[in-house]
Length: 310
Image (tube, rainbow, N blue to C red; front, side, top):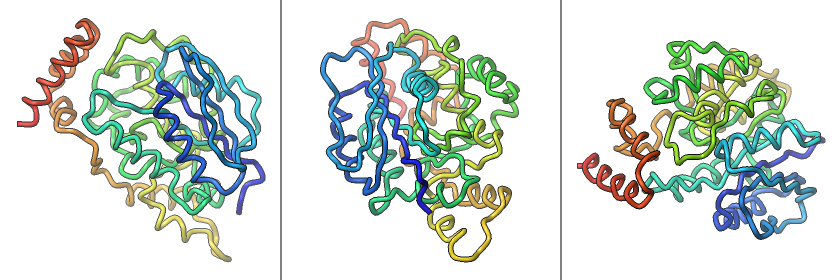
């Protein structure tokens, strides 16, 4: 059943050239009304619009360059007077630290937009009210050994959104890697009044409030009484609730979501795997990125990749 409220797509545009491609993807994905909220910092030209008759409104907000894509999303989510139930969070992910950054972004967005004019994730969330978040395929991942340098940021953020700041407990959770996902607005109700946690941008590679929020969105959704799943579960979830069959309860849906989640992320690089195994290397990379001149940091990063992949 289609919701009477159009979904709203939130996109943080840090790279306008990438947004042009994403705008075309959005136009092709929807044969039904949807709204669009664009956040951007330090821009001088108007952002392009998806060329589609199904776009029913656009809000454009200029924000400071702080909090990566997360703080702009929260600002838009909480300060605009929008009436909607289901939203989609995207951003112009570039991932300069990753050799396949553009391919990674396309994988994320196209996984979330998959469907024949009505994205599969959106259709499922409209049919299954207990679904609170849908992550891209292969991107609902265990937090075990993925906390990295984010311990202090997680400990600061978790209590503010109603979660325990115990890192041992957090490591047992799952997260939506890449910070792109479909979400139910009610499931993110606790993400309010958090601006003070977000640091100024200094090319940090880890350890910020934005990195912490990435690791807690799915946990907050489940704490609010909803289920977080990934697009891997679509084939199974699609048949639930059809016809006269009763809707599954939360426990059954959560079990399916966990069983179907593909934990083998194809974009986990050898470098990332090495950093997760050796925390001291992660600490060194973090400090180098913050202190070295950018050209020198890029050279050091390339050399490290070369060594790590041998």
